[in-house]
Image: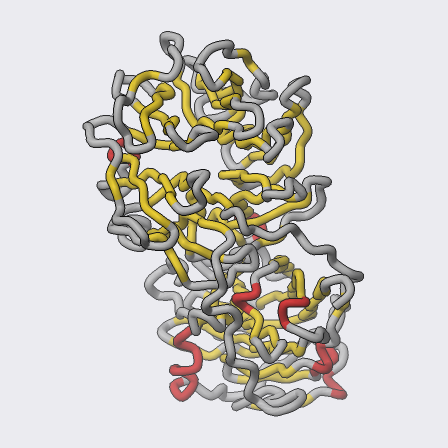
Length: 519
């Protein structure tokens, strides 16, 4: 579960604490315009809007063969809970590369499709303790430590033939690119780094045998450079844009499969970053996605039709860097891993990763046909139709006091109009809510039911800025959160700081799915 203040109620405790909810002395008045057609209850809401109060409980693809490997760490305890996870591109599977305590970053798959190199922090929150290790995706060989010194060794990349390893090392006192054999032997500088500068974050193109890397100048600003696989012929590729100051500029470059394009992160300042593409021949830079947040670790899909990357957008209630993807032609990003507990630290693709599928016309599901249940609260009043549109016709809930918090919320379960659950390429959720009191560490939250791990995963956790309407929304392609019975289930919760009871209004619950073409 994502880190929360100790006095905040985790979603998993809601059902267990229902028996302890205080009953209100009186029903609170509602501001809705449509109460004449509503219902009210102090124990349950629309216990079954359709088809019973149960729901799909069977997860999909527990043993799905992996298509990608992803370094991730728990946001609340990155040293003890970190791994190189093995998943499909639809977030199915439960495998991982065998690991030990310590946060892994920057994993890269060997050309043989089995060996994986990565950096690991040997000491908690100490980037200078990073060393390089090699393991395997299938457990066929024991983990092997490649570097052993008092300097940081980081950001590995295989040579095109897999015989050598390029990485960032501070063994000479400042960061530079080093090269060794695939077993870490005969390590030596790959190219000279100018005095006062630092080089790192290299990627080595299989198609062109060229290396792209990020060079930091004495002011701390980064630009991208190209060099031949021999270590000679270095030339600048980008200029860092309008960024200035330490940590800004062009970072984390990666080649497209044909070597003609580079995806990279352009950081413009605190909480301002863009995902960019650079043409290798001309150096022309185009912006693929800009956010008042953070992006990181871009990688092209094997067919180069998408860019995968980490995305954090705090203003939208999505704080941690989560795996997302975006068409190479642009558009809005889709979360592949929506769970806020995990922080992305690197990714790569196995040779079997599939091409992206084409989506058909989006379908908006009817909330009137969903099963909507009372999750928490002391009182509820309204009709399910009031959740249909953002129109000021609102469903009303009064909070209950649970562990010194004021809690209220709904559980929504939608049947998906597809032949198979895998036919849902993407689903989009949008909720409009407000509360009569905010402040402190109050939050609104949307959490998806995770069938594989038998829990609810928080996707959006938004700190309300006023008592007016607040919009929470996301889009995801994760099948980990779809039941084999073709159902989608999530909670909408108000979790308010201790004090007087709170009126919680839900104006709209919207679900849109993008089905696969030609199901």
